[in-house]
Every structure is written in C-alpha cells, then in structure tokens.
Picture 1 (tube, rainbow, N blue to C red):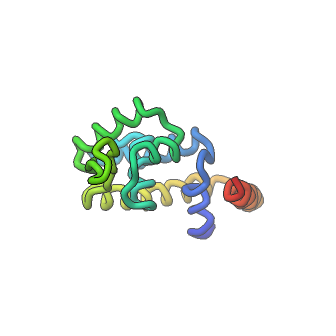
Picture 2 (spheres, one colour):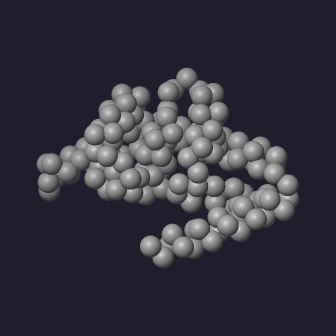
Length: 145
C-alpha cells in the first residue's frame, strides 16, 4: 500500500468514526499528552490551513461552539494552540498552532499513518484495492459538494 493511499484514510472526512478512534487512541495514547481524536482534528486542520477563525473550525469539523470552547481551552493549556483576537474585530478569535503543536500533530500524523498501514495489512490485497477505490470515489464526490 502506497503512502498516497494511506493519505486517503486521513483526508477523507468521516472515513469511519470507529477506525479513526481506534487509530487515534492507539497511537495518541503512546505519549504523555491527553490528545483526544477531536483535539487532533482541530490541530490537523490548523496545520493544513494555518490560522483560522473559531467559527470556521467549528463549521469545518461539524462541531458545536460549546464543544469547541472546551477543546480549545484544553489545547491552549497544553500549549498546542494559541488564541488571538483579530485586530479589526475584537469579537473574532483566531486560532494558531504553536511550534509545539505543529511538532506534536506532525508526529501523530506519522504514527497514524503507521497504524493505518498495520490495520490495512490485515486485509487481503483485493479488499485493500476495493477500499482504496471506494475512498477515492468518496473523495471525488466530496470535492463536488
């Protein structure tokens, strides 16, 4: 299985909650920090997109503002992200990934890819090819939305 195929597991939103949770928990629990799958999603989005408005992060991750508030506070306490007020609009909070957060999320992406490879290795070659084909189709369809 190629790296680009493993990336499908990471880039297709909502691939399956069970698989994501299994992978996140198995690899994220190897470090001292208590980074939940939802915290990881926030950090990964900030890594990919750069700084973002809190409301936009909520929208992109289909997360309530109440849940986001709790997770942001946790990530700020762990020094993974920072929250700053936008100069033009003091009500508009912008989230930034810190250097520690960037290093941490990148390490976890690497671990996630390794875990995905391990799980995918348990499938037959035919099943892997079918899964990759289906994920590519999902990716194309989601791009149209």
